[in-house]
Amino acid sequence: MTLIPRSLPSVLATLLLMAGSASLHASEPEAAKAAQPWTPATLRQTLAQLPAGDAKRGEQVHTHFMCASCHGERGVAPTLNWPHLAGQKAAYTAKMMLDYQSGLRREGRRAELMYDIAVMMTPQQIADVSAFYAVQPVPRDDGTPRPQAQPAPRDMDARLLVRKGDPTRLITPCASCHGVVGQGGSREAPALAGQNPLYFVRTMLDYQGGVRNNDSAKGMRVFAHKLTRGEIETLARYYADLPTGKK
Ligand code: HEC
Ligand code: HEC
Image 1 (spheres, rainbow, N blue to C red):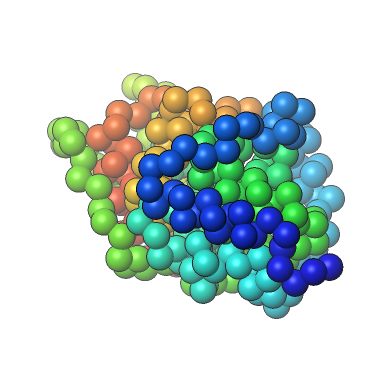
Image 2 (tube, helix red, strand yellow):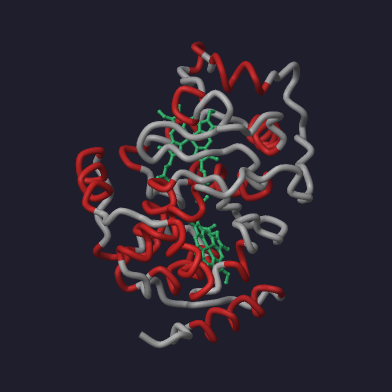
């Protein structure tokens, strides 16, 4: 295997282009057409079939593919609205890499950057890099701007929505899937603690608009639909600054 992934220069060129407003990749990922939505069963089976990940080897994968150039040395992205990977559950990271690879997750040009990288990776590399992020400390005070909910939802208590949900709108508590301190839950339910709030808002709006539709059995879209933008921004701030962020 060569040391420099072949299409990395194009990825970096794309990155530079993104600084401006140039339009990118006109074509959709080829594989996207064939990508099948997950069912809970196919997802469980696929994740179970991945090889065991090793965090040490994962660090080498992280270096080899220059993940750090966008996601930071330890998985805390230095960029305004790109996701942090530190402290993320391995199953979720692995699922995302598979989804980018198959084109199932392709909500926009940023996802296409990930497609270009994911298609170069083997299942072992995916498992290893996922294990590496899982053992990094959860991001704290990541230095990115906090969204100001506009209009501010009246009397909204993010903690209440997270812990108790909203029975009147059939919103299950976020914590029942994402953990009480945002540490992630069973299977692929991701950690949210310390996540970059601008990325959080963007991806929730993507679920809401249906452009992010890689979630198994609409497990996340169904909740995103019920939230107002103000609520999403308030939740993003809540998770970004979750006081403990402990596992
Ligand atoms: C050129 C910049 C760039 C590089 C290099 C890069 N990423 Fe990304 N990554 C992004 C962007 C931008 C997103 C957000 C994409 C979106 O909104 O769908 C992202 C999203 C992700 C996500 C989804 C996070 C989430 O919370 O859903 C994972 C996992 C990820 N990247 C892993 C990696 C790994 C592993 C590598 C190295 C093998 C890597 N990335 C290299 C820019 C990059
Ligand atoms: C029934 C379980 C469940 C509930 C309840 C739930 N989620 Fe999720 N959530 C998931 C799963 C599973 C995913 C991963 C979906 C995928 O594969 O893209 C997810 C993904 C997300 C993501 C994307 C994370 C990333 O890094 O890209 C955010 C943000 C999120 N959820 C926020 C919330 C909030 C806020 C609530 C409460 C209003 C909530 N979720 C309620 C299961 C749930």
